[in-house]
Length: 232
Image 1 (cartoon, rainbow, N blue to C red):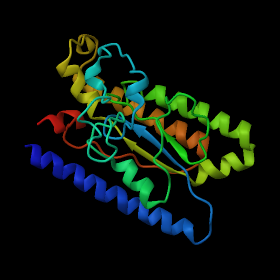
Image 2 (image 1 turned 135 degrees about the vertical axis):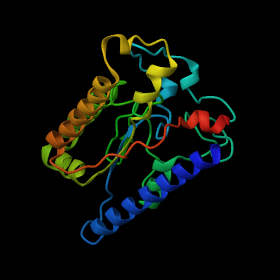
Image 3 (image 1 turned 45 degrees about the vertical axis):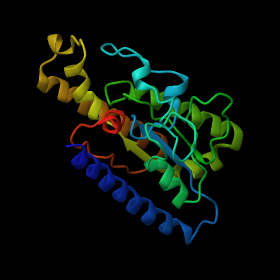
């Protein structure tokens, strides 16, 4: 079971590289400047936001089980835990390397105020219902800061040419069944699916409104939490 799950993420990683490759080659012919990257998601893309604060939901408690700030996390590449649910790098790190970008820092990292290369909003145990809206609010703040520091024209250029990665959704369907949730006392399963899809639509609408660009998020595959995969 663990092997099949690992294959799923290897395939997802390969697909992400193909997308990054086609995007970077398409822009490199015309633009010498780097393109930024903004990342949204859960533990699969989280590079350390869980170190600085966990998000609470109406049916989930914030605990250290959603943190990766201790060994053996990080030991084989960074030699110390970074907050990644991995002993090394994650998919966004490999894409950043390929695009010749620095590893993107977590948004909640203290003192962070430079977003010209992008930033990572992903945090463990997030979902379309489970406070992805928090990440969107953070993104809007970054947009305002870029406009304030660089001016509207340059900020728009950076944002419109940036790469946006979203890997999220599994936790929405998994969490209500593994916690003491009262969610299904007020919603049928069908209504809950509609709620997830409705929030997905809102996310895409926000990105369209801010950036005027087209985006297709990662399709949710069979459930797997990266932390749980590593513990198998």
